Length: 190
Image (tube, rainbow, N blue to C red; front, side):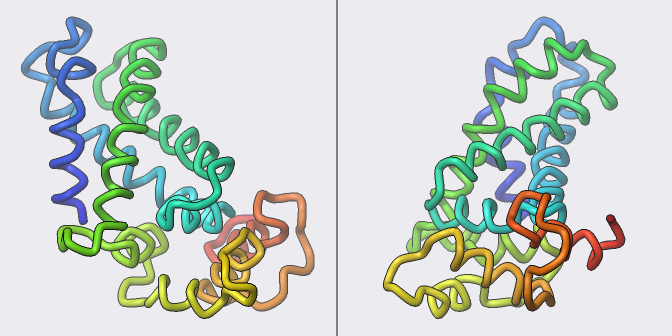
């Protein structure tokens, strides 16, 4: 998946990175790596920080409100990576992330949803983001659809079950109605 992600970053970063006067040409590869690492790390943060349902919805092409939350979280991670790795201003990092991240994520999700494109699957993305490789995320999501369509309640049940949770009692102030608290405990957070 990382190779596919890097290829998409390279394809999508022309004017934002390669032709950007704020980034010296000798730093272009560093910038591309920072973007790739920022996107991957941002997806992991979404999955492990309480927005796994939103990420699942995005991977499956559902839930536009949750997708916006995922994209914004990933953009922030990319901004931080660019500022740390290149020492560029927050404004430049923000403008790069705002252009590149939505484009890359859109292409990545389209590839994952395309059954004729073997380069990356929905399960690959969710497995890499959660650290749970080899899980049939899409099979579990399909079986969770009680009413024939997938909604956020279904996604939350799948996400909770796949990440080792049961009920979502307890901390319900996190995004995802308790799943955030459950996942936080699972991954050593609050």
